[in-house]
Image 1 (tube, protein in one colour):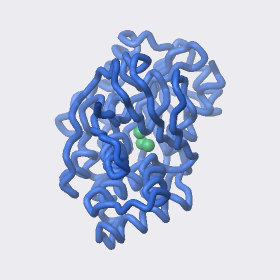
Image 2 (tube, rainbow, N blue to C red; image 1 turned 180 degrees about the horizontal axis):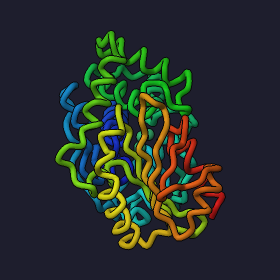
Image 3 (cartoon, helix red, strand yellow; image 1 turned 180 degrees about the vertical axis):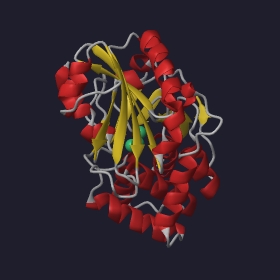
Image 4 (tube, helix red, strand yellow; image 1 turned 135 degrees about the horizontal axis):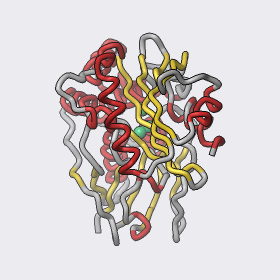
Length: 305
Ligand code: MG
Ligand code: MG
Ligand code: MG
């Protein structure tokens, strides 16, 4: 029986590449693993797969009765609906510990570092397995994406070291220029619907019994969205109603200015204001220096609930 390896809902590059890189490692170790994904990929992930000739993992949203490894999350809200009917053999992640539990012992590789693919890199090193060129290239870009080219406060020495070693394996000398090309691909918004933009990197959280949704767009220049703010808000309102959310928030993150413009719709704006020690004007604020949802947003929002 094959084991499926997949990342979170609304998969980002770390989730897709992680499914590929972890499956390959497990296969080398004698397990029979298949990388899958829970949803459509982003323009950024498409850029990475095209650049290094990666194969798109197959779409699979139901896992009852299957053996699985999950990567880049451990929150039920980001898992397939029937995850509790699957056997979780292991978790590889770099987020706060979520609310998934298991009936059987499992393998756990969770580290407070910049990217799940950095954890996978450490696993390859641990088992002394050689990383193929194409997989090394994809892992390198996944780490550069998650760490925002080393600018994110989540980035550690382990991540920069991993990128340098992977760059050597895949033969890319100027990896920062390649990463900028990737972020430019990620910043394409023309022709994209408001729903596409709001859900491109969107996660829901159960914050002590209250549902909160936080989306993020990491862009080279967020001013291209200036004319679309009303449209984004209108769609956020629909998402809030559809999901029964107390609060929905979008982070428009400018990776050059190194900060995030937040758009907020909440049953109680004061919770968001208290979390970020700011005043919302027209349901918006600028959060200087905020690049990371996992490190600079969720830990401040969650205690408010
Ligand atoms: Mg992720
Ligand atoms: Mg990640
Ligand atoms: Mg990210």
